[in-house]
Structures are given as C-alpha cells and as structure tokens.
Amino acid sequence: MITPVLPTYARADLEFVKGKGAWLTEADGSHFLDLASGIAVNSLGHAHPDLVKIIKSQAEKLWHVSNLYEIPQQRALAEILVENSFADTVFFTNSGTESCELAVKMARKYWFEKGYHDKFEIITFEGSFHGRSSAGIAATASEKMTKGFGPLLPGFLSINWNNHEAIKNSISDRTAAILLEPIQGEGGIRVVPEQCLKGIREFCDENKILLILDEVQCGVGRTGKLFAHEWAEIEPDIMMVAKGIGGGFPLGAVLAKENAASGMTTGTHGSTYGGNPLGCSIGLKVMDIISNPNFLLDVNHKAKNFRAGLSELLNKNTSIFEEVRGKGLMLGLKCKVQNIDVVNAGYSNKLLTVPAGDNVVRLLPPLTISDKEIKQALEKLDCVMTELS
Image 1 (spheres, rainbow, N blue to C red):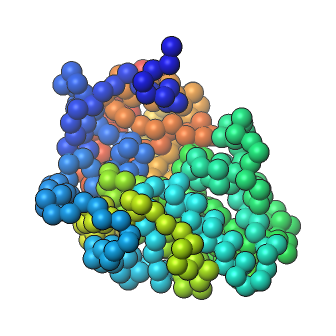
Image 2 (cartoon, helix red, strand yellow):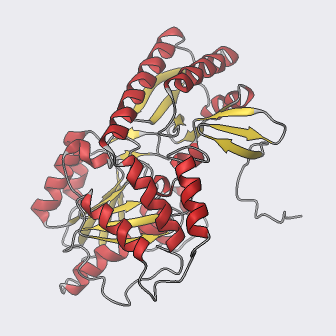
C-alpha cells in the first residue's frame, strides 16, 4: 500500500527536530554535525539569528501579494544582485528547477525574436544536473533521470564532460546556447578548470551563441567567491541561482544580461510565488552577509583548513578515499568503497554527508562553520575511515 507521502525518496531513518548553526538535533536528542546543509541550501547554517529576526519581522507585515503589484523587497534584492554580478536584470523563482526552465526559455526566445526560429539547440554535458522538470531532465540526458518519462523535450545535445573538441564539433547553425555547471554537484564535485571556462566563453563569443551557467549549487559564496565563474574571470549571458540564496527558504533567481533577456517581454513568463516579500526579505539579508568581502575571505580560510585536513586523512589511510575534489566549501571525497557506505558510516558517527555521482561523497557545510567544527568533522571522518577499514 502506498504511503501518504509519495515514496520517491530513499530516506535515512533520521528525524530532525531542531537545528543551530552547523548542528542538527534528532528526535531522540542526538546531535549531528551537518556537512550536508540541506544539499548546499542552508548557507548560513540553521536558525541563523539574523535570518530568524528578518523572518519574524516580515511575517508580521506581509508574506505574499503576487507579481500583479510592485514589491519593494524584490526590487531591492534585484538591485543588489545586479550590483554584485554581471547581470542587468533578474527574475525570481522558488527553486533551481524553475530557474532552469526560465533560462532555457530565455535563450530560445532570444533567437526566436531575432528571426532564427531553428536556432533552439542547447549543448549540455554528461554528468550534469539541472533539475527534475521536463527541460531539466532533457538537459541532463542520463538514463537514470529520463527513463520512463519520454518523449523527452527536444533540442538538447549532451556531450562528454570537459571535452573542448566535442564542443567545437557540436556547434551548428541550430546551436542557441551552451549550458553547464562550473562545478558539477550531483555529477561528483567535478570542477571545470578555469582555463576551460575561459575557452568555453571564447567558443560562445566566436560562434555568437549564449553561455548559460548553472550556479544553483556552486553559487552564492559556496566556492569562496560570490559566484563560482568569477574564479575564471568570465561572465555568462544567463545564470541560474537558487539553494544558498534563500539560506533555507525556497528562493531562486535567473540573472541575465540585457541583450540575452531581450525576448522576455510582458506576459512571456511568470511565477505565482516567485519574488514575494517574505522570500526576498530573507534573500536580502543572505546577500548582505555573504557578499561582504570579509565573509568570503573567511570562507576561503576555512576551506583551506578543511581541505588540508582532508588531505592528511587521505594520506593516513589510503583504503577508503582516493581524492579530494572541489573548491571552497563545495568539497567531495572520491571513494574506493561504495559512497553510500561512507554516508551510512557517517550517520553512526553523528555526521551528515551527501552522496553524488562518480562514487563521490559531498561535503557541503554551512559557510558559517567554525574552525573548531571543521576539526570535529575531520575527527568524525577519521572514525568513518576506521569503521570501514
């Protein structure tokens, strides 16, 4: 018999009732160090006092009015995002999946309005993850994601990851855009080298096509820059954002240059909840905190310490992990054992991690994690290695 909650998740037998900072408390009172952060969502940890204050204050005033009216908080958040990024304009969503839908529509509408009605194909990469909507799974093109959901939305061409020759050979008169994650999250914390990102930007410029970056997981301070592509000193034309920007509240956005967004005129897209006063008030506070240069310097400091500690663990015991991957506080451990065994051993050591593709375990702590908590995380991972040896 089916359960009241649709059984689409393989859930761990854990039930958390409270959180503070980098810690979660289970129903039985056990405390877990959270290196999952709701899959890179709780960027400022659990129950951050500034976010709690904002939620309480705004909830007493106004939650939702719809986009039929002007929303000052939405306008203010858009202005901050434009000021701190490549973008000229922003549309607010509730999730990364919704951001993907708009990014695809925006790119195709751009060419349609220019009279290129056959220019709709978007090049994507093996191992990517762009959400679970029809456009998202078509863009991902993995059998695990698409099986049973056909026919797939046409117009996507998936090629081997990080293969510049394949990119060159795939561009045609039908190509509208290239879509990729600067760091693949679900794909196994695979970092696109900075030189490759620069090369892809050059391909797009040479062929006059759009570059769409999916920074749903790697954006908003996660890598030690506000956005991951900044490390390569490039700019996309369109960018998808979500997860960390809401600090745990459902909030996403699509950022775009004026030219790329030119086809999205009145009536071409909408969202009932997207950009409501409550969500944008929270997003404003998250951006205020994370965009501070000193905050990002601190993320880089902690990331350096964490990575150094992980490297020491790998040198100490070579039978469990073979590689540390990632950038900033978006880290991954390539496993020699099954990654799910590492995740489960983490549970028994009161540690939360996230499995990913390519037999990787993701470490996605709150950006506010302390040096002391990083040391505790390393101690728990040492216990995990001992348990699995």
